[in-house]
Length: 402
Image (cartoon, rainbow, N blue to C red; front, side, top):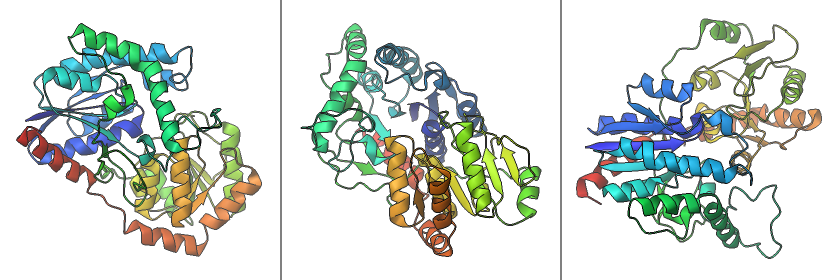
């Protein structure tokens, strides 16, 4: 039995597939993965010995371009072509295909042509049609005044996906003898998508019209030791505050300096993760350590608080470690996690463009003893078996031919 996993996106889109791949092998299923040609994604998969087939252009080259009217359809067509060519070739001899990440418009067509089961998986409820959550593209964009119902907004989202992917998808489907689809998003999502989010951090909340299977987050424990330099810094004083924005390159160095100064004003040292923005403080002081790639699971267990962008992986890892959080969101996805962190009482939600005063107030709340106590209590409710649950479901699905 062999399964193909695929996702196009940043590390946060690929890392959950690594966890699923490990658990699939544990139940006797062979795995191969299609992922973008990013060094970190390749390293993650190589680290667990899973074969990887690169597809699509490097993700960094597309940041900010996918939704643009001039470049979006061209990029969408390139990704659809990669689905029908590279992903289709990788799927030969497989018994099922699981797709995640950026809209996998052509993935279901590949499975359909091969006659194998197809599963669409997403990592947070915001990605699924809902009366509770607006679609991801709504924030910051003009919305017609008569579309206050989220279902109507989701209908507009479907139109947008059709405009981006429809022509390219149906052209390629016709070339392999498949009929056209009239709703790209619903075709890719299916009527029974899987939701790989933690029920505490990403609850379903009123999803409609879909038979959603919530497995829990696909989490892979990180066994790497912290570098000696990091351990020495941590041992040399009180727990510092972590600052990092992962693969979000839109955070400026001015924001970094502002955050560092706000953290210092609370009497704490700082650990700064470079991330895709290559963040570094402007001045060199011994109360600040700049990091590259490290085991965040181990690090977050030793910090006073985590200041981050609200990505699914960062939020989950901080919550699991029991670290209070300050979330500075920059998208509807990250705003959802910012709001949930605040709702749970395990941290605070900042404004997308914070000031020194607002960030100082947010840090004061996050660093309060009661927030720390609440974060530690919630940590005990976070599930870590989501990938194992999904692996068993997939094995049983393939075994029964459904």
